[in-house]
Length: 316
Image (cartoon, rainbow, N blue to C red; front, side, top):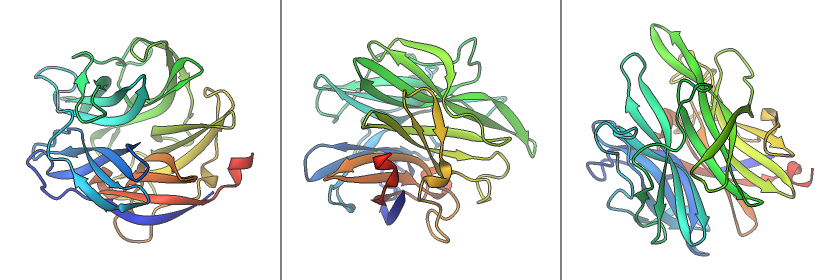
């Protein structure tokens, strides 16, 4: 593959008190042939994450048409799993409703945070969302004792299929705990109650690796996944350890073959995505594949995009 970077789309800059900085984990939703809605997670001055959106020109996403003036999903009630943040991760349109699978998080004491997966539904085309439950739909269990995050869901052959990040522990690096996690798989009949046999999709490629934020496309009977991965030592500032984009393929959506060397996109030599690239979201428009992603600082420098110019994997 060969992706061509097109640059920044949007960066938050104290637009509102609840949109002080960061534009994390972008999601594309085509609301018309000419307009693309991009959901993302901004942070307020207290580092709490909400969900909101911008609208851009579909043929030229760098042209922002509208910046929404309120959250579509705010942090949860005090003491709930998402009282410190509700960050979007995946949007599924099903039977005229939009299902928003999001990451809820709490501040931690012994570790920085704890994540779980929540669900909110929109009946007005994605302008507002209501939580289905105050509690999470995917949380830690006997087999997954740390946290769950980064959900990506498709409805395929009558089944809801979920790929998500599951933490396998924390490493103490320079005196601070750093989480490690890997992409796993689950299934559901309704998108709410999930069968989770603890299936690992992306095995660790090196000591201290964390891989997350899968984006899955089913194409010609084959599953294709873009995701991000990093190391655990100084990954916020060290390019050798920081997030980059990976790629994998599968015949059944469960057993995956990592092909990171064929992803065809990497961090820039300088600029807003020179240290890290993470949280890819791949979608199609007018026969072309586009990728939304974040750069340095986990979305602090904004949302950018790239277009797939060559794809030898498409015919495989």
